[in-house]
Amino acid sequence: MKKNETPGVVNSHKSHWSDLIRFEDYWAIWFGFVIIFGSLLQWIPKIPKVGDWTTNPLAAFMIVKEGLVTGNILLDLILLMVGLGVLTSIGIAFMKAESVSRYFIGFIGIFIISCFAYWISHQANIKYCGLSYAMWALLVGLLISNTVGTPRWLKSAAKTELFIKTGLVLLGAEILFKKILALGAPGLMVAWIVTPVVVIFMYRFGTSILKMVNKELVVIIASATSVCGVSAAIATAAACRAKKEDLTLAVGMTLIFTVLMMCLMPVFIKFIGMSPILGAAWMGGTIDSTGAVVAAGSMLGPTAEKVAAVVKMIQNVLIGFLAFFVALYWVTTVDRKPGGPKPNAMEIWYRFPKFVLGFVAASLLFSFIVVPAMRGDFNFVEASYIKPVTKVLRGWFFCLAFTSIGLESNFRDLASRMEGGKPLILYVVGQSFNLVLTLLVAFLAFMVFFPNAVQ
Image 1 (spheres, rainbow, N blue to C red):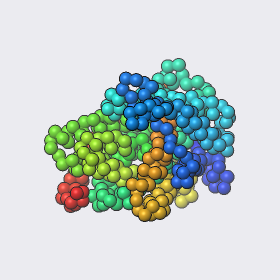
Image 2: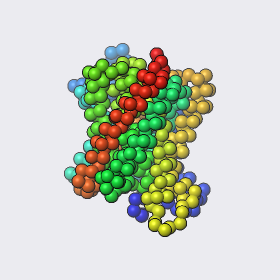
Image 3: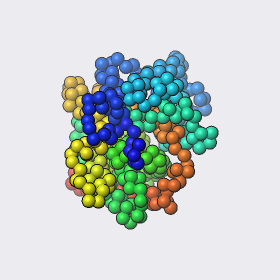
Image 4: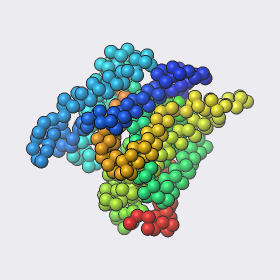
C-alpha cells in the first residue's frame, strides 16, 4: 500500500461494477441502508442501550418499568453482537480483507470491550463529567495495545474505517432539512460562515506559521475543530489518505477539549449573564461533539438546548462538502508532483470518499421522502425510526471504531507526530480563533440581524 492511502477506498484508476462489493466505502453505504430500511419497515426491533448506574454496576443492564425491575438486556446485547457480526462479516467475505471466521471471533472481543466502554461512561458521576463512551473506548483500546499488546485475533476485527464510515452513513439520517430550516438564516450564518474561515485559517497557520510537515494531520485537526469533531476528522482523513496515527492523535485531543468546553462554557455564559440563545448558538458552533453540545445546551434551558443542537446539525451538513474539497485540494495541490499533469475529474472521483454519498443520500431520503410521507412530522420520524434504531446503532458503530483505533495505536507512533507540541498549539490557537469568530457571528445573527428568530 502506498504512503497515506487508506484501506477500503478506491485507489485504482479504472472503475468496475465489482468495486461496489470490493471496497469498504461502498459496504459502509450498503450496511447503513440495510439498517435504515430495516428501521423504516420496522424489521429491526428497538436496539438495546446500556443504562445509567450509580453504585450498582448491574443496574446498567436492568430493564426498569414504573420503578420495578422487569428483566435485563443481556440477551438483547448478545443478539445485537451476533447481528452486527454477521452483517459486517458479509462485507468482509466479499472484500476478502480477512478470514471471516477469524474476523467474527475478533469482533466478539471488540464488541465486549465496546460494551465495557459504554458501561463505564454511564456511571452517574462519570457521565456528569462528560467523559463519553468514545473516550473510554479509545482509552481501553490504547491501554491494551500499549501494555500486553493487541492479540492478532483481536486486531483482525479492528476495522476502524468500516465501522466509522457506516456510523457516518447512519448519521445522515439525523440531518433533517425541515429541522434545520426551523432555525432559519441565523443558524446558517453561524454554521456556514464561520466553518470554512476557521478551516482555512488553521490550515494556513499550521503549514505556514508552525511549519508542520504533516499536512494530513493539520487538515484533520482543522476539520475536527471547525465542524463536528470526530465525524469530520474521519471524513477528512479518508479524503486525504491520512494514517491511523494522525487520526488517533486528532481524535484524542478533540475528545479531551470537548469535555473541557462542555463543562466550562455553560458556566462562563451564566457567569457573565449572556443571553441563553446567544450562548447556545456559540456552543453549537464551537463544541466538537453533537452529544456534548446537547448536554451543554441543556444547562441553559430547553430552548437553548434546541438552538445549540440545530446549529450543530446545520454544521454537520458540511461534512460532505468538506470531504469533497479536501480531496480536491489534495489531488490538485498537495499530492501533485511539480510539473506533473493536471489531474482530471476522474482522479478527484477516485480520491473522493464514497461513503459520504451514503451520508448525503440518507439525509435526503429522510428529509424529502420519509418526513413528507409522515405529513411533515419530523418529531414522529425521530421518535419512531431514528432515536430507537439508527441513532443507537450509529453510537454502537462509533464505539466499535474508537475501540479499534485504540487497539491499532501505540504511544511511540503518536509521540513521533507531536513535532514539539505543534499539533496542540494548532488546536489551541485554532479553537481560540473559532470561539472569538463564532461568538461575533452569533451575536450579529441572533442579536442584531434576526433578534426574533427564536421566540
